[in-house]
Image (cartoon, rainbow, N blue to C red; front, side):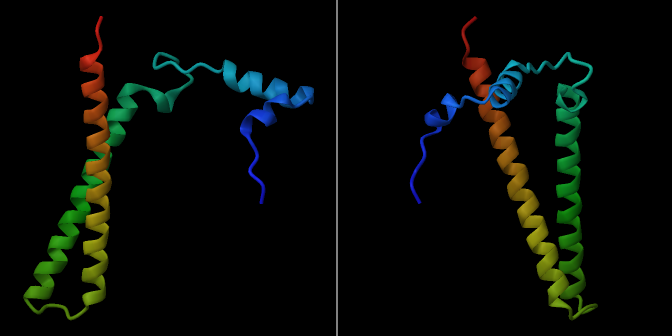
Length: 113
């Protein structure tokens, strides 16, 4: 399959496509826009806290499954492995988000006014 340069697609003659591209490029996003309810800083922080709570829940479930398995209350290693995998994946995601937030914070702090 031949590689197509994206620049060659910019020279499209169709007015509809050019109008759609112009409309897309003209959109501006603002944290103060009341119509952009999912783009506010408060919503971003709320989602981050929800993510942390979900991760804590998965970690707690995994710990409970480990305790049940260690005490011999269950022989089902399938539930244990699923709970451990969910907890590990959620923790990795949370750490990745935290790292990106810290990276953005450090970039903001390095900006000169």
